[in-house]
Image (cartoon, rainbow, N blue to C red; front, side, top):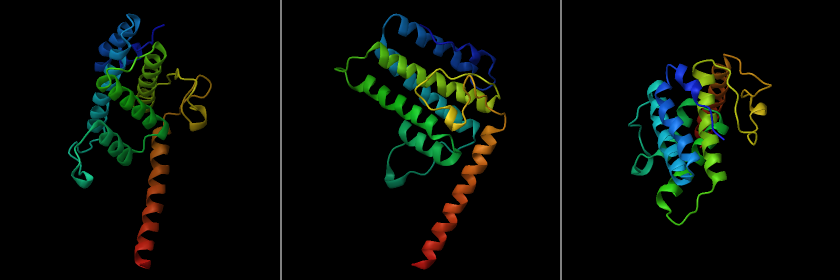
Length: 189
């Protein structure tokens, strides 16, 4: 079985990920599951750096408690600054954790199912980004995600072109309400 990444070829933002995404299929085909997972992680980290550029986020954002910047901290910063759906951020984090295991745990035996799961996460992140930034109407492949209930596009529930803007406005309103509550509580002290 092979995932189709051909939709990336028409992308103005993500076309450069097409060739490496296709190579993931080849690694999967030759049953090099550890390399599938570690390369999905590497490509996902590169994708997050691309999102920093697209969203004009500072790659040298301030860190709490003098920690080093990492893929993990980049994901948390991206989520805090740009309101991506929690389901998408969880896919990134799962790829990050699996990739760390692939690189650092030589004793872990990677299965075909684990590699496919990681590939599916990566595919669906790319589909979300294409649907959001390039107004495509691509379908997700992961049936275990509750995408339809989150307003994400599925085969039966297509994404409206202004979904991302609506998502941003709703989350911005929530942040403003939270900020007002925090200010109120500080005055009470």
